[in-house]
Each structure stands twice: as structure tokens, then as C-alpha cells.
Length: 382
Image 1 (tube, rainbow, N blue to C red):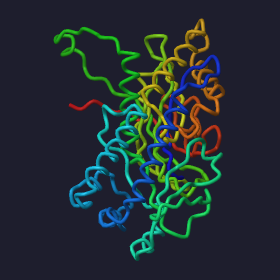
Image 2 (image 1 turned 120 degrees about the horizontal axis):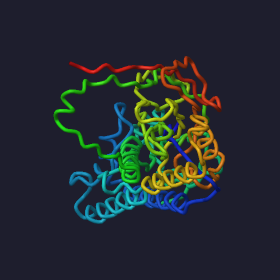
Image 3 (image 1 turned 135 degrees about the horizontal axis):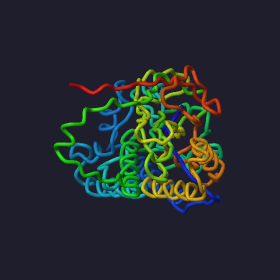
Image 4 (image 1 turned 90 degrees about the vertical axis):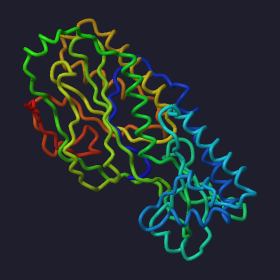
């Protein structure tokens, strides 16, 4: 499953279809940064090749762009110019994603496929490429640059017969930063109520067990991805309703192990803390991360549409946990093609996961994943 990150996003609420400006704009800015960087690195290949070959090998196919700004990477005559361009490119990308305050460096160069390593190490000149803008289903060609300054147009699905170095983001670092921004933003929008409790009250109250649901196994279905895309980066946002207030509850859960399809993973990961969800019910929407998302704006929009939908339901208790499925369903229906097109992509959804229930080899609604969910009660320690 390539370059995207599987993400379970709890998306709640939408009363009308809209296309937020941040979607396409962020994606286009990110692609422009990558294209310009790829073109620049192809021109400077003779100077940066030794550094790239030290960093990209059988132990790892990725090299951070920061490695190219070290003094030994190039001659002193060209150092300042390329350093400035690379630093500026990385800063522009982080600003486009809204993660400039939580991430120091995201851009990297990676070899597109392990099969290319031997030919590249033997001296075959590489191409420098980048992922195009927009939904990958609409891609028709991959633009690439050779070290002589020529442009090449590559097939989207047919692996090239020469090495390709892809200018990309470090997927795990990008997702980690994006999720942190989303968590902070959602916490600011829905702060937890403060409870004043005396030390005597706390001393008299025994700790209570914590009820959770654990993801024991998960497997992604086959998803034909372009060769230029890297490993998936996955996260989950759990959707539900606040137990004490008529407000949405959105929890974001990173799934850093979910890299490839047709592979069964055994994470034993706590996904749902039930004291945070009313009626003992929640939905889990699976999403896959790409680079063109501004995470702060995404979190604000998710919270806004979720709150709007809850406000339109006059009596939540009358419908109980059926409200959650309505909210999630309306959001998925309302997401326009232009919102998350090669920004974070919808993968699938698990509706109505209930507290205390086991779901063995349970398919998601669209059949794109199969997972086993089990209840887990965490007893307090002495």
C-alpha cells in the first residue's frame, strides 16, 4: 500500500457539502516545493551524490535533506546557495502542512524501490521525481528530471528501468507532527471540564478499572498504488459523543506499524477509552495520510462540522448511539472529491464498535480492512 497513511479519522458532522480552501491550496504548495527541490537536486547531483550514497543503502532507502547541508556534502563554493534553498523548501512545506511549530525538518530523498539500489550503486545515473498533485487516480504521468537537466515523463504504474530518487516527506515524522497539531487544536476547541477535588476526597476514592477496546489484528486489502508512493502512514480518529456534554468526541490514534497491504499486523493497541464516549459506542474511520493536508485547518473543520450536526439533533438520548452512525455516515457522504484528494484519504470505516464486545476477523464497512477487536479492562495498580 504505498505512500499514504492509513488513518482512522473520526469525522463527525456535516450538514452541507463544502470544499474548504485549504485542501487544494496546501496540496499545490507542497507539490511545488517538491518539484523545485527535485529539479535543484538533479542539477547538483555531481556534488551531492557521495552524500546520498553514504545515506541510502541496503539498511535504509531514505536520506534526510539535512544530510545534504552538512559541510562535507559539497564544495564550499556551492554550499551556501543550496543550503539556503533546501532550508527554505523544508520551511515552506512545514508551513503548508501547519506543523512548523512542532516539526524541525520533514523533507527527504528516498530511492523509489529497493530493486533500483544495485544499479544506482553501480553508477547508473538517477532521475529525480516527486508525487504529482491531486488524487492519484487522476495521475497520468510522473514528471522527473535527469542530471543533464532534461525532463522525463514516466508511467504511473510501470516501474522505471533506471533508478529514481524521490523528493518526499518523512511520512512517519510528518504524520506524528500533524496528529500532534490536530490533538492540540481539538483540545483547544473542546477543553475538558475542570473538577476541583480536595486531597481528602482523592485519598478516599479507590482507583477504578479502565475499560478499553484493543485492536488485536488488522489487515489491509490490496490497493494498487503508483510505484512512486512510499509506505503507508496510518492513523485513526475515533468518533463519538461526549459522555457529559452534547459535544462531539474526536480522538486521534496513530497506527505507525501499518505500512503495507496484504500484511496482517498484530498491534495489540488500545484504540478506544470508553470513559470518553457516551452510550459505550463509537465509530472508527480509517484514513491514509498524504502530504497536502494542513492539519490545524483540518482539525478545526472536523470539529465545526461535527458540532453542527449534533446541534441539529434535538434529543440525543432519544436516538442514543444511533446518532453516532448518522453523524459518521453524513460526513462520509458529504466529503466532496476535492476535499481530501491526495490530502488525507478515506480508506474505510468501522461503524458502532460497542463497549465490552469482541469482533473477530470483522470486515470494515467497505471491505477494505479486516480486524479483530477485543475488550480489555485495565486494573489499577497497587
